[in-house]
Length: 112
Image (cartoon, rainbow, N blue to C red):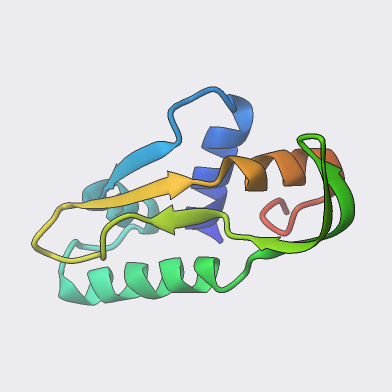
């Protein structure tokens, strides 16, 4: 939740930011107050998988002048696998997800 909140609230504030993001692993490790090593990398990777396993569903709503009967949206797309060979997590935030949570969700699960 801490990782998702950090990403969500950064992009919720300004929807015009470039939505592709490279998040340094060192910053993520600092967020959780853990050392950057293979164990922490596995932990962060499992958190990302957990976030991606929780899409939001839209049923019978209009979005960008299109009627959505039923669709799911992920928070972000992982552009490259998380690995120790790279010191970043490369992802793309889903603009539709941000729009949906702003327009239709009174209290997104990421806010508490």
